[in-house]
Length: 311
Ligand SMILES: C[S@@+](CC[C@H](N)C(=O)[O-])C[C@H]1O[C@@H](n2cnc3c(N)ncnc32)[C@H](O)[C@@H]1O
Image 1 (tube, rainbow, N blue to C red):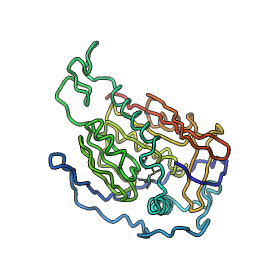
Image 2 (tube, rainbow, N blue to C red):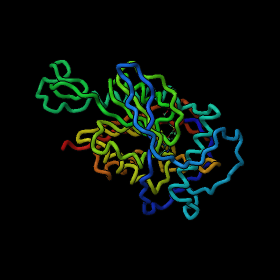
Image 3 (cartoon, rainbow, N blue to C red):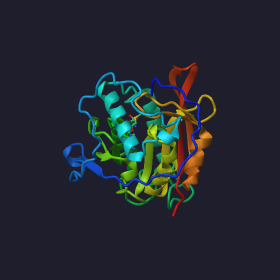
């Protein structure tokens, strides 16, 4: 993502996390008749207090720099509103350059490769897709669709793409209801407005959790809970894929925007520590050139995959 940001190369001390169990607001895209997305009743309002048409040039620095000064941390619900307002403004102004970009396509392919490389449960030596095993379940038995969660799905392009490529059942969750992706030709997609940490419906049921560009906008204090929540949603053998801004300076670095939203540059060590700390095992990595320079650095995305042990 190409974001102007002020650098604050600090590493705030992690503080105890605040549990959040907010509501989600389910929504579904209409799909082709035979792949009609599931529709659930609308849930309670998220109370994000968003302006329908965000001001193009918000007043600079209306919120504290919580990366530099954790004492001014507004707390999780207020920070969530900051993030939602910030992204709402970016989408509203068409500044979401990350939507459908080449980096996203590479991450989609990385996810696809991870799903296809999964150990095949019940498959002996020589067994596999070519031996009649099912490419979706990895077993020789009749298939069910893979179930994926796209965390911070934004406009939902990647959710729809993953559904089509993997013939999967994909749920996209985002604080904002900006999804406008056309329905996939294959598989199924539905969108839920809500906070990832409040999304508990799929606990223990998902084959994959995909977090493309969401973790690095969260408060550092929330990272362990964020990783643990992703791990909790996976079924045994499931895979979590996370992509973040890779720190070009070799250390975790905060780059808060003037509107209060955090951007973090992360290191492989930090991300690996978070997800192994949540009980997952490293399963793959990719470094993706964002073809973008910032503050004299050529910037890259780091995509990492982690696997939950088989049950
Ligand atoms: C950089 S965008 C990436 C969007 C999408 N993954 C893509 O690649 O096109 C980050 C998205 O995460 C969403 N987001 C941030 N914090 C979130 C949270 N706590 N729960 C759900 N979505 C969140 C934002 O609203 C935004 O749409």
